[in-house]
Amino acid sequence: MIYDEPRILPAGDCHLLMEFGNEMNLELNFRAQGLATALETSGTKGVVETAPCFASLLVHYDPDAISYTDLGRELRAIGESLGPPEELELDSRLFVLPTCYLDPWTREAIEDYGRKIAPKEWDPAFVARINGLDSAEQLVRVHAGTEYWVAALGFWPGLPFMMALDPRCLLTAPKYDPPRLWTPQGTVGMGGSSTAIYPVATPGGYQIFARTPVPIWDTEKRFDVFGDDICLFRAGDRVRFVPVGADEFTEIEARVAERRYVFNVVDYQRFSVRNYKRWLATLDRAARF
Amino acid sequence: MIEVVKPGLETCIQDFPGRIGHWNRGFPPSGPMDSWSFRLANLLVGNPAGAAGLECQILGPTLRFQRAAVVAVCGADMQPTLDGAPLPAWESVAVAQGSVLALGAAKLGARAYVAVAGGVDTPPWLGSRSTFHKAGVGGMDGHALRAGQVVPVARAAGTPGRRVDPAHRPPIAADRVWTIEAVRGPNDDWVDEAGHARFLATDWKLSSKSDRTGYRLEGPQWTFTEKATDKPPEHGSAPSNILDQGYPLGGVNLAGQTPIILVNDGPSMGGFINPYTVPTSAFWKLGQAKPGHVFRFRAVGVEEAQALRREIDAHCSEASLVAAGAR
Image (cartoon, rainbow over all chains, first blue to last red; front, side):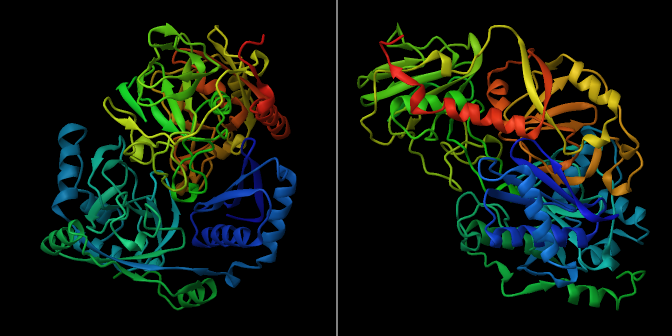
């Protein structure tokens, strides 16, 4: 459901949560990101920072500078001034990530889980099966067939939660229960209908089936593309996974280690919600790659 | 420069308010758990209230000063000694080159803070020196202090001979029961009235599985409204699952049936409800509570929580300091 009016909810003495709806829907995330950007340019006093998520926006404010009630009023006014989501245009970089699907490293993590925690069908076969695909190979075609929209970052710093922009590539998957004890750095996986990349080796709950050698987390400041930051992505970026073999993965990994890997980034585009919806209307959503 | 002789239990560098402005990429603020004691320690030695200092948890460190310094220890009572003689807490003291400051186990409270005139001068990461252990960010090499490390300190004259008037110190009590303020929301409408009554009536026990990312509470089961079961599938299957959302600092995050208060190093988002939020004014109590202690929650409104925050901010000022000899 998309709410007629966003709900504004208290969250302690210096946060509030603005909810735009209660479903996984790109349009709700566009609204959250559009409002976050508008709030930043409006210079509304007392706003410390914001964090958009799938269908909501968390706002951190300074209660000495603005009251909860006044901030809520400002947020509604700015939200209304943005008009319908079709009007939104958001800055959006495109990252092209070479990615090794059905790779040996995530397979090892899955097998280790099977030995130590609970027996489990190989994740790519499982995700293909429950989504009505013929094979793990078709899962690769479908998963790599779309650009992904970075809807939010979090849980772990720099970890992108991404949604498929092409509805012909929509997939869903339940999370591990209980979770995995480890996941290789750079693993690509999905849970619910979102895709994530693990910035570093951590425990995890997503179904996993690919790995990228491109670092999305850099505490050593090795690559200029990070600027002053430690994590690569911000909300509103797009990602395309390009399938590569294990040999190419290893070669790129070596270039990363020697600091001579060249990031493939497009940084001049704006994402128009109107144009996107126009394109959506031309698609046969039932089709699969 | 301060040499770490014994590191204590996860002694770490923190500044206040910490790493702010990066929540939208998953970086928590970090910073001192009890920022009331922390700010007073800094003010005592003549630093800005937020300058980087040391947070000592449960068991304090032993530190050798490689040059003369002015220091203050505030917060939990860790029986500090200087070259073996008792050192008064809540006071700024000049220490000579080569002297050794030793903190023991926390007798009262859980976290003590060591401020040094000039402030700890490690390189800031994303605008803050605060340590975020989990991701290896900030502090010294991203982690808690280790024996043999030398902590850089900026040069400053310092202000020895000052003391915090007891009326302005956080009232760390000897009993094991804490009253913690809680503001209803953001997801309070997922819990039924019986669930709310139970939350406020229960003596919650602070689990030993608590750390700077979250404070786990042990207590009764929760009950829910229809909203928790009648929801789109993307919210997840358990009643406390919700479509992933941003988490406020202090959220009482219901992971299954276990409430976890999200504290300074906690996650920025996730798929569980936060029926209550602990306001920042209660964080000093979280910082001074030990596992096994009891939390009783008191419902407060947004405005009351904000007024309490202003009261604490007022305590963290020069006006709270007196000459060390004064009563």
